[in-house]
Amino acid sequence: MPTKTTEPDIHKERRKFLDRCLKWTGTAASLFLIYPLLRFLGYRIPPKPRYVTVAAPLPLSGYHAGRDFILFTDQAEPFAVSRTCTHLGCRVSYLEDKRIIECPCHQSRFTRRGRVLHGPAKRNLPALAVEIRKKNDGTIKNYVVTL
Image: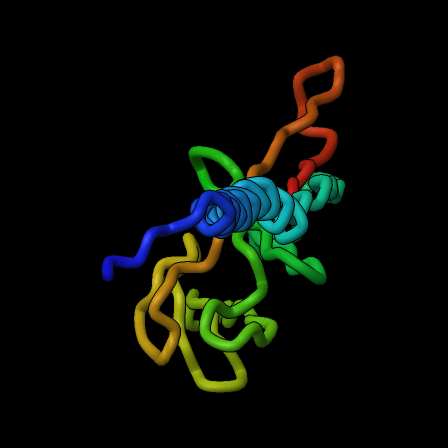
C-alpha cells in the first residue's frame, strides 16, 4: 500500500527548507556586513607629514645630513633622500670622498639621488620633497624638507 504523506509532514518539510534558507541568507548577509567592517578595522590612517627646516647656506660640502634625511644642493635645485636603507632599515651615511651613500650594515651603495648602485638593497632610497624659502632680497633663507 502506498504511503500517503500527511499534511503535517509537508509542513515540517517546508519549515525545514525555509529554516535552512533563512540560515544561509543570514550567514551570507552577515558576511556581507562584516567584510567592510573588517576592512575598515585593518585600515590605517597615514601619518601627517613632518616638515624639517634647514638653515641656508649649507656647508661648502654641499650637503646636510639630518637624522632622517640627507639634503644636497645641486646647481639646478636642492634634493633630499631618506636615510633609511631599503634593505633592512639601517641608517645610511654619505661618504663625501667617494660621493656615494652607503649602508653601514650590509654595504648597500646608492648614488646621491638615492639610486641603487650595489648591495643587497633592491629598491632606491625614497626621494623627499624640498621647498626653498627665500628672503625679500631673493637670497635663500632656508630649505624645508617634507618627511
